[in-house]
Length: 193
Image (cartoon, rainbow, N blue to C red; front, side):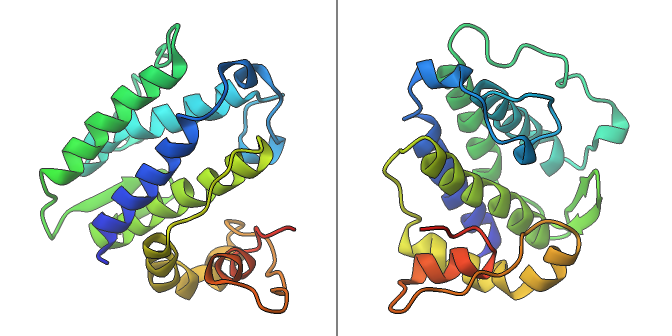
């Protein structure tokens, strides 16, 4: 799987979880380590993902926050946060499906990366947040075998380096007989029984 498809698959997984969040859960406290927002709620987490989706067309066009950020203060969620997130997700998906030049550079806050690597970064955040949100809110969810394979190929190979940057927690020893999803989650330090 190429990294653009990995991104689309991870983004679809995140949407499948966001779409199943009970609106009443949006006001529940979310783990502080997921965001810099003080005392975050799940609405704040959905906002963070809506914000990321809204940035995709700009990132694909070579924009960065250094060029200006008119999205941070915007009301991206309105009265129907899930529907608003879905609309931004659809726009991001359409932008990626239109294609990205092979020499495109993604200008993130933490550095510039070729598109192939940038898509892996975007996929990483979405895939593991989908799993974490689902786990925290008791939403039935599993990473698809295709997504697990893509993350093994494009993310786990960098996990130790990214762990040094604080992206992933320490490795977790997989339980006996662990399936591929569990082994992946252990490799990036997110698995818990």
